[in-house]
Each structure stands twice: as structure tokens, then as C-alpha cells.
Amino acid sequence: MLFLVGSSTFAQKLTKQEAIRLTLENNYGILIATNNIETAKNNKGVLNSGYLPTLAADAGANYQETSSTTSFPGAINQDTGLPREDIEILGAETQRYNASLNLNYTLFDGLGRFYNYKRLKEQYNLTELQARETIENTLLQLFSVYYEVARLTENQQILEETLRISKERVTRSTYQFEYGQNTKLNVLNAEVDVANDSINLLNTKQQLANTKRDLNIIVDNELEKQFTVDTIVNFISRLEIDNYLEKSVENNVTLLQNESNIRISDYDVKVSKSGYLPTIGLNGSYGWNENRNPPSAFFPGNVADIYTLSAGVSLSWNLFDGGGTITRVKNAKIALDNQELAKIQVEQQVKRDIANALGTYQNRLKVYEIQQQNVLTNQNNFERSRERFNLGQITSIEFRQAQINLIQAQTNKTLAKYDAKLAELQLLQLTGQLLNIEF
Image 1: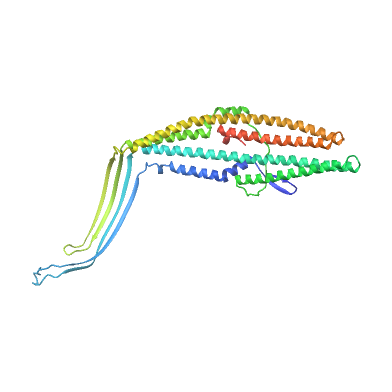
Image 2: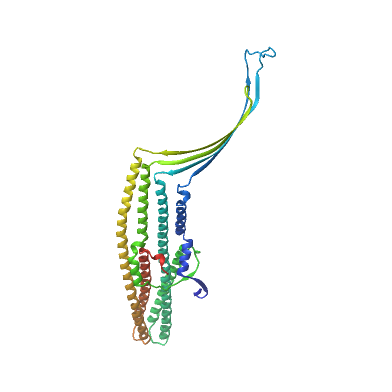
């Protein structure tokens, strides 16, 4: 969907849903959190559980070449009656080959493997909660900038209308001066107001351009990409808010992370206690050896092939390890106690934060309602002032003051609207519902 901006430039509308999609797909913090989930998923898999056996293959080869001379001092050859000749063997080759498969499997390790496996699964749950927190914080950042773009967009429209009215006033004042109906001072005052309105509009346009670049960074758009945003804001009903508040303890991501940390600490205690129990393992191997021996002075050469199959059971029980296991168990229990104390502290802080956020939200909604009525009042006052100014019944200063009052009322209403919406989003995050609503 395209919207006309200025006289000839078209910009695509960036809806809230599209901004969320782009942020979830491209934001670097979210991508890193997603990768952390994948790592935790790998860690909790059966391949990292310790429940599978280990199988190793070994092989080797050895080659040896030797030359030898064997002498027989004093020995007589019975056939010839001469001294026995030396036996000389040159380049005798010895070859040895071996290969084996070795299997080891832990049957029981004091339940350490069992609780460590549970700990890894809980660590995966914790990583998911941490990723959820990252996504929630990123979405809050997204909408704080998105709604700032929307606010500045509305302010620009207000100032454009203000400048249009001020220019009309210059034209009217000039005509009146030319026909002798007012003084040059009125024309000059009108021109000064046009200059001030033009400056205010230029400054707002610059702020809007800067804020759009900030938003492009968050959603990973091109830095100078042009777009418009949705300025319509809908608030959640009080009935839904009350329902979310009732379930806030069950859904708050900080409390859920604390509960996960308590379970992890409890598994740490149990893993440490496994050091008190024995370890039972199975082992087996199948091997092959071949020796190729050359002939010697007294024996002929030979080839020997040996096949070996073995299996066994082992038991290891560390009856006393110098106090290391006792120390680890004590420290794990202390860590568990600290997590439970942190839970109480975090619960109090979350309840306080929710109460503060609810109060802020209600207050900002009330301010927004008042500002809406204030705009209607100032709009009515401005229209009456313009009629009287055109009839010459009030001065240009009085008319300008009515115009300024209207501008302030309109910009204050815009600010109050987006402040209230951001307060609502912060409240939804604390109740654990930020990712469950329609934006």
C-alpha cells in the first residue's frame, strides 16, 4: 500500500505487524538468542546425555628389518671336520599388525548422569525463557521508536496545518494593509509567526527523519529507506487487563526464569550427591594380532594370527575423596538456598513493578482522555478567535495565542496517546502477555 508524501515521493507503509516480522527475522539480539536456543537444544539431546556407550577402534602396524651374524667359536662341523661356519642372515623382515574394537558402557554412576540429563533439559527451558525476554525487550524498544515516528508524523501534520493558517493570515493582513484596514505592524507580526512556524516544522521534519533511521536500524532496513507508519492506536479493555493481572505470577518471564534456576540448582545438589555412590561399568573388546617373524639361526620363519574376545564388569567406589564430594554437596545446597531467597525477592519486585506499571497506565489513560477534551475546547476557542479576528474584534496577538494554545493541546494529546500505549505494553510485558496480543 502506497501513500503520497510531499509532492512526488512515495513511501511504503510500515505496519506494526510488518515491523514485528522484520524485527524477529533480522534483529541481531534476537538472532543471537535463537542460536543460544539451538546450542541448548543440542546439549539436552541424547548424544550429550552420557547414556550411550563409547566404541573405539585401534589399529597399528610395525615393520622391522634386521641383519645378523651368528658365530660358533670352537664348534666343529661333523661332516667336514672343519670349524663350523658363521650363519649370516641379511635383511630379515619382521611385521606386526594389530586391530581392536573396545566398547565401554556405564551401567550406574550414582544417578549423576540421570540428574545431569534433567539439568540439561531444564537449562534448555531456561534458555528459551531468556530468548523470550530478549524478544519482549526488543519489541518494547521497537514500539518506543515506532510510536515516536508516529507521534512526530502527527506533529508534522499539525505544524503543516498551522503554517498554512499562518500564511493565510499574512495574505489577509497584506490585503488589509493595502486597503488601509490595518497597520504594517500586523503584517510584520504575521510574517514573524510564519517564520517561527516554518522553523518548528523544519525541526520536526529533521527529528522525524532521524527517528526513522533509528527504526530502520531495529528492523534492519536500509538506513535511508522511506516509509510511513500507522498512527491508529487501540487500547486493550480493562476486563482483559484484569484477567492478565490475575495470571501475572504464572506468566511473568522473570519469575519463570527464577523457578527454572531453582530446579537447576536442585539438580546440581543431586548430581553432587551421586559422588557418594559407586560406579558400575561394562567393557568389552575384540582384537586381532598378526606377527610375521623371519627365520633365525635356530628357528624357521613363522606367521601367527591371534584373535581375542574379552568382556568384563567393573565397580568403582570412591569411599573417601578427601572431602571433595562433601564440599560440593554443601555448596550446591547453599546455591539452592540462594535461588529460593532470590525467588522471594524477585516476587516482591515484580509485584511492585506491576503495581507501578498499572498505576502509570491508568494515569496516562486519564491524561489522554483529558487531553482529548482539551483539544476540543481549544479547537472551539480557535475557531471563534479566527472568526473574531477576521471581523477585527481581536488583535493578531490574541489570535496567535489561541493558535499556540491549539498547537500545544494537539501535540500534548498526541504525546499522551503514545505514552499511554507504551505504558500498556510495559504492563503487558510484566504480566507475561506481550507476545500474546494483536498489535
